[in-house]
Image 1 (cartoon, one colour):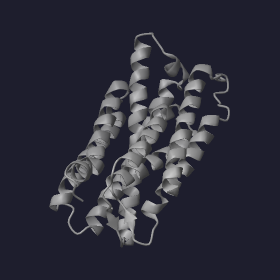
Image 2 (cartoon, helix red, strand yellow):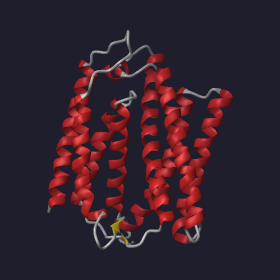
Image 3 (tube, rainbow, N blue to C red):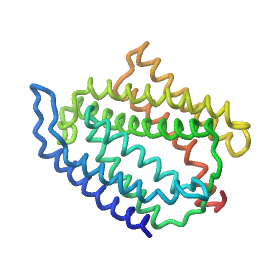
Amino acid sequence: MYSNAFGISSILVYLIATGLILYSVFNAQVDTTRNTRNPIAFLWSAGIASVLHAGSLVDDFWNPQGMNFGFMSAVSLAILLIVGILVVSAFTKPVEKLGIVVFPLAALIQVLKLLLPEQTHLIREISPGMEVHILSSMLSYSILNIAAIQALFLALQDRQLHRHDSSALILSLPPMQTMESLLFQLIATGLVLLTISLASGFLFLEDMFVQHLAHKTILSILAWILFSVLLVGRLAFGWRGQTAARWTVGGFVSLMLAYFGSKMVLELILQRT
């Protein structure tokens, strides 16, 4: 009961945060001489929403019976990590506009979690090695998700600047050089965590290529390769703009399918755990 109340409250506050960020896009006053930003109310709203969001997941992930890694619970936890990383990062880096995508998505996932029936998938015992694997997997997914959204914003910015037709959103973004630098910082961080995730999986899982893990392993390795090639391309050939965006989105799609694609098919469509 309390979980539902927290969930509904988080949805409302996420929508408030979205409204505030949209207001800021059209009314922001940017100090271009000092390149600083004023404290942003919608980030505080998103912070409150994330706390409420976390409260809605307490019964799923911290209970005596074990941690529930059912599909919607896992997706909800992932978007919570994405919101948390975005909010914390936005106090020092110009990533707050990504909330235009992230906050409504978090609200939508919370709505779906309340409405869709979910099969419980309890994990009762987790070894320290598995904790490292799960934590690095979730963090890498979250950071690379933010990188994918950043890449889409960068591609839109690049296209509109070439057409000399910039919208209010594009005008509110930092310069492209800053956007690109931030994108590759996110990708490099996410790739390190993805490397830890894959390495810990090979070390602590019995067989990463058994039937129910083979697709996840192969797609995760593919994502690792795509992001690695992108970083090499950036260093060796100066890849940027649309090229960087396409490789980033491709790598993230592969990772998303690895983490949640088959889980969705098994639990929501085939009704199997």
